[in-house]
Length: 130
Image 1: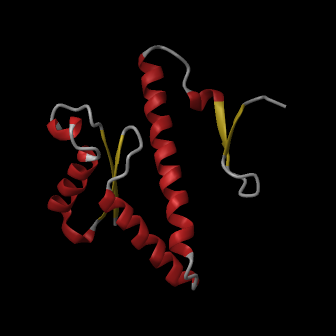
Image 2: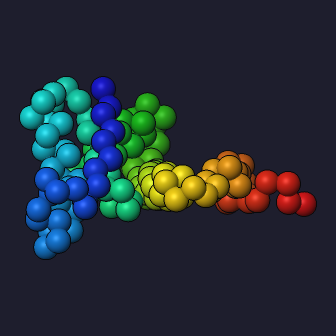
């Protein structure tokens, strides 16, 4: 199983975040491992896109398993950087959308769409634009 958790480093329960980058994400991994043990692969992210180092290791494990299935020995170095970038981007955009909604504004997801065409790369474009 894969368990994804997003932690806010500004939460009062993460007192060490002001002096330790990634503390909230690390705590997320520790809490999930304490609760579920080794049967769950944890991906912990902070609201501003920082991924816990243990979670990067878990992404590498998943990419290696995918590479084994595809018989692609280059899967890990090819997939992990893209996965990290996409996870961080999605988390940052979701956080920005939530903040905009709280302020009464339109969200970026209402105004933009993600072009997932692999040939074009990952690009955001305005809806209705020509």
